[in-house]
Image (cartoon, rainbow, N blue to C red; front, top):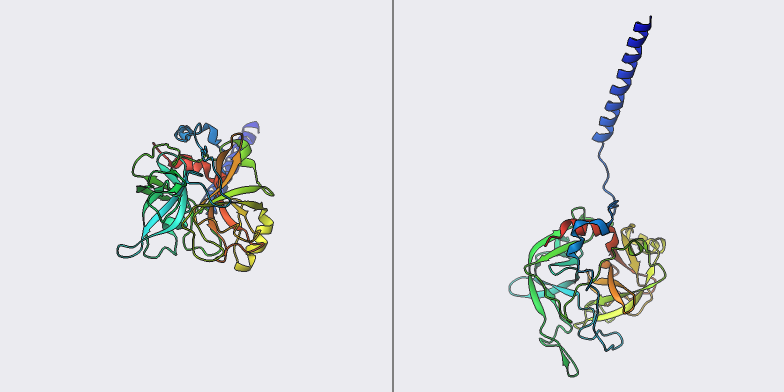
Length: 322
């Protein structure tokens, strides 16, 4: 009887194990939906490619003169312009970006594989510019070297960005690998990434961040001179309410800022930097990259939507190389 009982118990156990394996296989066969923004367990501070980020010198701004609303010629020296060919020999500037290492510029994915690019082709990245109308920028008797154009060795859109999506713009982020290293100077520098736990966890709701770039103005068109302005960060629920009428969905890997009216969301184009200035002397950290907003910028109660950089730190570090 004991032996027969052992055999029955063994068979029951085997049946249970096989059933468990079958259930696991069935679950594994189910398609898993992609997250709206990646959730990474690995700390960026432990990532082997952290050494590629110039954490000791990033975000330093040596401009010593400020003109309200207009950036001095060496202020925010990590801002970049993306240059496209637009049929024939015409060149146009459609987007912006930020230099994050000596070899990489961070921008938004729709500027490299978006459905509205049409026949425009991304050609190069311009660094060290201030006034697009002049070859040499001067502020009084203080002049900067000419801006420098860099070729693009590799275009890397985020693999989960959906160019044809009209409802949301999650994963709207991209890296551009330049064709050569960028030397550090007072006019071309890198911005810091928000790699510390405090920066990664901060929502910045209710605080002002700095927006800088060459972008739309409340009078229409775009400005040839680099602009900057403080913009308030808006909570996700309020932002969702503003965009629900266009069937747009705000996700946690995005951050909303602006909406005070005037020109508070006009001083940028897609891919431009939304920055936090921290410490004494202050250093700039790249919190967001401009993803989308209303065409008629500067409307009260309508913030712009930015890709939240902290949600994509591991993707950035996984992707960059020396």
